[in-house]
Image 1 (cartoon, rainbow, N blue to C red):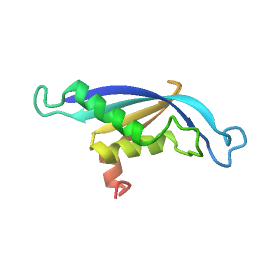
Image 2: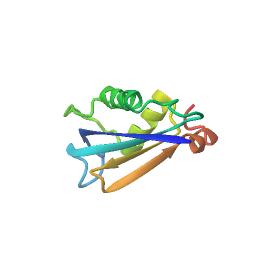
Image 3: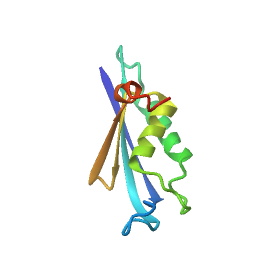
Length: 111
């Protein structure tokens, strides 16, 4: 079984070197985090959601600093921090990245 929780944060970032996105700009970052569950209620929705929100708070997406965090960076941070099965991150619900723990471990990206 799998359990998925969602969260969102307004955040600022930039894409260094890109002609249109190189300046700091605003998005709403949406995340969906999926956990493996072996038995009913092993993962409690609200506790899992709070854990995800804590990860987003750690990233300081709300600060208008020189952040260059991508959706991929956000997903990798969440995977490393809470050991979930997978994570989907979107800018403004238009484009999505999907990071899967099994794929990452096989490519040594998490090490």
